[in-house]
Image (tube, rainbow, N blue to C red; front, side, top):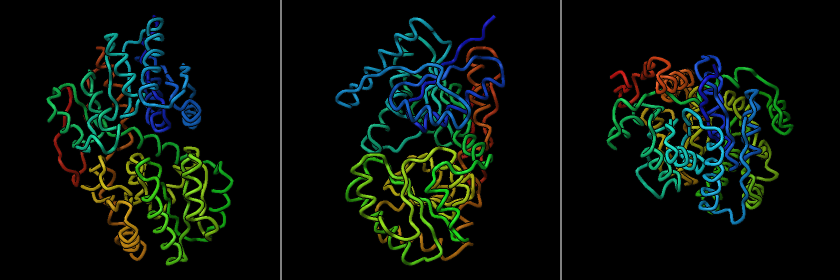
Length: 398
């Protein structure tokens, strides 16, 4: 007798990274058959990300892009998913986070009455315009999901505040922690030659990793961020900076104009996930506008200065492992200098551990999905850190 299929839908690199440990955990448990579906949003990047876990997409949708609009992408993916599920209907569908792929997968499954499991549910900024359109996407997915897998207690509280039933919410932790610990632990050689050369020549200097990929960071905000990086490099001769740039040609040109030719600064193309995970594990400090890196860095005891005015990862702020600095040049330099001048203050930021997970989120996700289908008992929720707030726990057994 064949196992019931669970389709895991991913269209971006972060989605692929966060879904990969779930697929592996499902295979290990042997209760359901995971099917990795690449939505067609960023197919090459999904394939590259899965390769870091020795996985490949089981299904890749062919989505034609013309205007590049969100409406075009959403409708194209819904049509493709509906056609797939006409021929191959899964027992449940897992969508991750808040992308256009997540919304398309959730809607297409809901319309076919296929249970939707929302991984990384409950994140909220409280502002529909920031981040846009992600804040709306995740709220919409919550309306049709049958099971809400919250990465933290605060995310679970957000869902309950929106009248989601307690029994439909489980705190699992974030599977990105599982992913980054597993990949960084392998200590693979750097694939990117620029990164390999920079790290080989570091001569004991401290590593600062910088990422500024979000669309709202482009233009004037990015110029201010680059000015801060330039000032820090000039002030601290014992630091190296590695900045993986966004592939957009205009953004790359802006980065090169701001930092090109500066000693101890390496600007690269987007990095393979193993390279990025290893860099985070070796970093002294991270400057980032990435939600995923805010979740990953604390696993390695690395504090993050968040290059955004608001963040839905407020657990980082509560735990003390991240600080909001926006794109203000003076504030970025001031806060970075505090940590570069004091190892004690730097280490104190992450002394409370990672509020986003303990490396077991994928196992909980696999078991909770099987439990939704009546194939397993509901797992216990992730234990909470003493320093995290709030500290309530939720799950179907409560």
